[in-house]
Amino acid sequence: MQILKVSSESDPGATAGAIANGIRERGMAEIQVIGPRAVNQAVKAIAIARGYLAASAVDLYCVPSFTNIRVPESDQEKTAIRFVVRTRHGVLGAGEATPEANPPDF
Image (cartoon, rainbow, N blue to C red):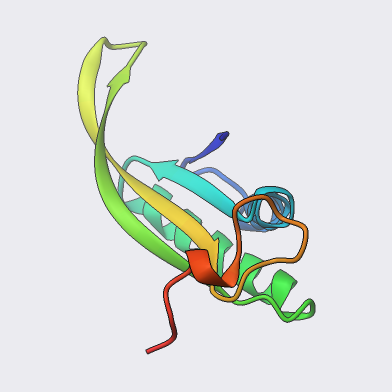
């Protein structure tokens, strides 16, 4: 699984395309960010990707969590936010995305 690393300079439209492709190919996408501006760009990208996939009757949801990462340039450990984006109802033909694997609507 490839992790999309989003920065404060990332283009939300391009990132949304990468998210949508991950959803279509694998049924999920994983995004990692450090800092509030990067979180902003990632959330925008998730919203845009949701719009891209709505035409295919695919709805998305995301689960945020914290993770610790080591930054190679400074050899420091930092806390990042990880967003796992999945389909609510599954995508036909995608590896792991089946309706049984996704939580029910509440």
